[in-house]
Image (tube, rainbow, N blue to C red; front, top):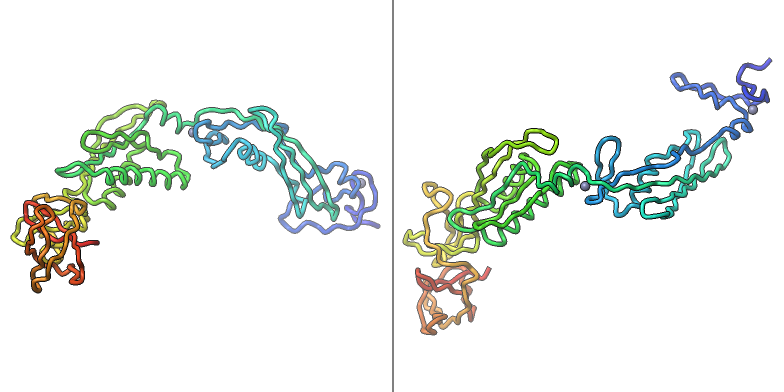
Length: 368
Ligand SMILES: [Zn+2]
Ligand SMILES: [Zn+2]
């Protein structure tokens, strides 16, 4: 006498004995069917009749569930392939499943996806084809809507102490803001964006989507370019959803002097080429080549006279090396021979050296 399960429950044919499911595993009713009954009702692929997908026409984000997701798709065919992949389900009995998809553009908004599947079920190779039309509709995601509406919660003001930030400093600061936003985006943060970059009289203003982002950007800019920033809440407003938003201004002050500037702290030891302005000012004395560092009681930087920048220095001829302390060079303006201080960065074999003529006299400037 046979045990139950040795007959197909649908047609009553004999079936070979099948293993009992392991404890805790669901009892699969289909497993008891004979092959003929099993394949008669078997569908390897479960596919929706059609798929509709809403894509942001500005940034390519896709609306899934109730939120927008950045999918990094290059075109709508990519989006369609992704959505079909998400929506298809392959029967768990199938093994060694392979599939391919052949998109057919029907019209501007419809892509017909011809999908071919193969898999092994009950030691039998099964092939199946399904066609799923994907309808793409275009919209504007929440973030792009906010950007377009000029929404922002932080304004980073890039300024410098007692001077205008240089073009390079301003460009680099804006670049850092974009870099940070890209990093946030790559981490899946859709709330981080640059709303607007505006050049103003004494610097650049960068409007950003969140207070937190404004603080991160300000921190990164001052870490790289020196200086510091203050923040203060400016006003409370409402965003498009009626939420209260308070705006924060981040006022960056880049350091008074920047690397490459030549200044005279007027302490009797002559001009200094600024090499670093992170923390307290550091540089090289032009007369001696010795290292210079602003004293603690001077704060980050001393009160100094601005003489020019490294770019203002010009090549001139070395006439003679006088001794350990002096070199004769041609004055680049009058071409008269002049004796100037010999710093330790002077190369005794050099025929030409860089010099800067300024209110503080004629000084050699290091090549590097
Ligand atoms: Zn059967
Ligand atoms: Zn968008």
